[in-house]
Image (cartoon, rainbow, N blue to C red; front, side, top):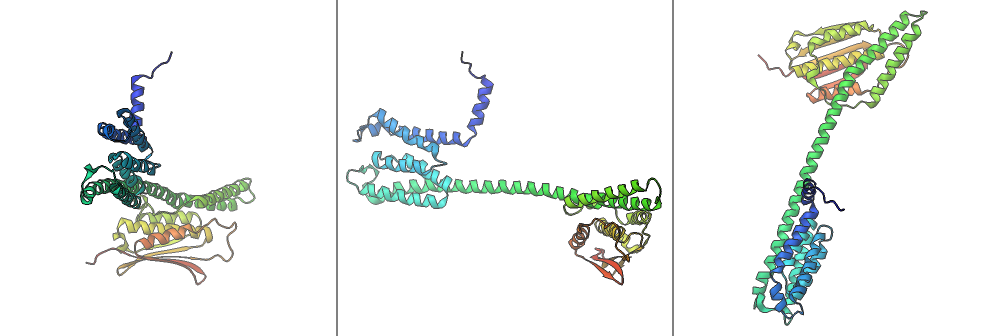
Length: 380
C-alpha cells in the first residue's frame, strides 16, 4: 500500500522547494499563463484556426518555456516573438524581455528590445495585422515601445541588484576569511614570541647541563634533550606565520628585569639601563620595547651564548632609542642555532608600524640592534 508522507514532512519539503529559483521560475510561468488566459476568448474569435481549447494549449506551451529562463532566456524570447506575430500576444514578450535583462544583463536586454521593436514594426507594416493596436505608427509605437523598454529596464535593474548582493556576499566572505587569517597569524606570532623563546631557553640550559655533566651518566640525556628542543624549534619556525602582535598580552618595561635575569641564567649576563623618562611611555610602546629586547636577548643566546649583552633604553628629545649590543663569538656555536629570521622581521614590522626605524648590523666585532621610534609624549 502506498504511504503518503506525513503532513509536517510534506510541509518542510514544500517550504524548501518554495525558496528555490526553480519555484520562482514556475511562478513566473504560471503568472504569464494566467494573464494570457484573459486573451483566449479573443484569440478563439480571431481568424487563426484556433479554438478556445487549442489556444489555451498553445499559450500554456509558450508560458512553460519561462521555466528555462535562467539557463536559456533566449528560448522564451523567441517563443514570445512567434506569439506576437501569430496571435498578436504582447504578454509573453514582457516576461521574456524581463528575463533577458535579469539574467543576461544590460547589453543583451538592449539588443533584445531593439529586435523586438523592429519585429513589431515589420508586423505593423504587414497587411492583415490587427488595427486595434493603433491606426498610426505613432499610436502603435506608443504601446509597443514602452512595454519592451519597461520590461527590459526592470530586468536590468534586478540584474544590477543581484550583482550588488553578490559583491556584498563576496565582501563579507572575504572579510570573514581575512578575520580567520588574522587570527591564525595572531596565534602564530604569539607562538613564535613565547613558545619559541622557551624552546631556545630549554636548548641552551640543556647544553649547559650537558657540559657540566661531562663524563657523567646523564650527559647523553642532556644532549638528547637539547637536540629535541632544537628540532622542536625548527619545526615551529617552519610552520609559523607572521602577524601583528597582541600587545595586550605583552608585558611592558617592568618585564625587562625578568628577561635579563633569564638571560643570565642561560649564561649571558645582561647590563640593563632604562631611563626614568621611558617609564611614562604608553603601554603600546612599552610592549614594543619589551618585544624588541626579548628578541634581541633570544638571538644573543642563540648566536653568542655565554657572552655579555648590553641593553640601553633612553629618551632623546621626541624619540626613544633602544640599543642592544653583544660581542660576536670567535667561533660559531656548535651546533648551529635554529633561526629563520622571522624574529628580526617581527621587530622591524612592529617598530615601523609606530613610525620608527630598526637597524641590525655588525660593529667593532660585535652585533648591534638599534630601534628608534617616537615616544608619543607631549612636552611640559
